[in-house]
Image (tube, rainbow, N blue to C red; front, side, top):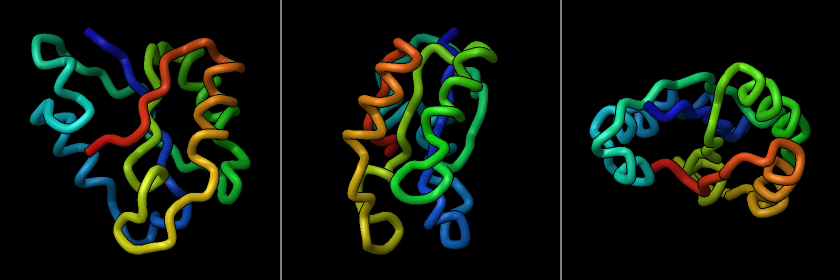
Amino acid sequence: MVKIGIIRCEGTLEQCPGTGCFKTIREKSGQFQEYSDQDIEIIGLADCGGCPGRDAVRVAQDMVRRGAEVIYLSTCVVKPMPTPPACDHPEEIAQAIRDKTGVKVVMGTH
């Protein structure tokens, strides 16, 4: 079993209920294909805290403390979903999470 945490864009909260992320987890498609032979446990789903990812590292650290082995930056963080603009800081957010937690960070969910 792999335990994951998902961090999504705060700006998309009113437009997207996370259905695309949950669908790809359930179907083990998109970025979750590598877990086709494993169960996936969602440790947490939280927003980034607003630009430029103000709370992303803190939220990721909390998810790791609660058992997350991999942190996903949802698709809305890495490309304009469901509508532009896209986040200007996904690589910086991902690197900061890696530096502070030591866990794998995956860019995108679906």
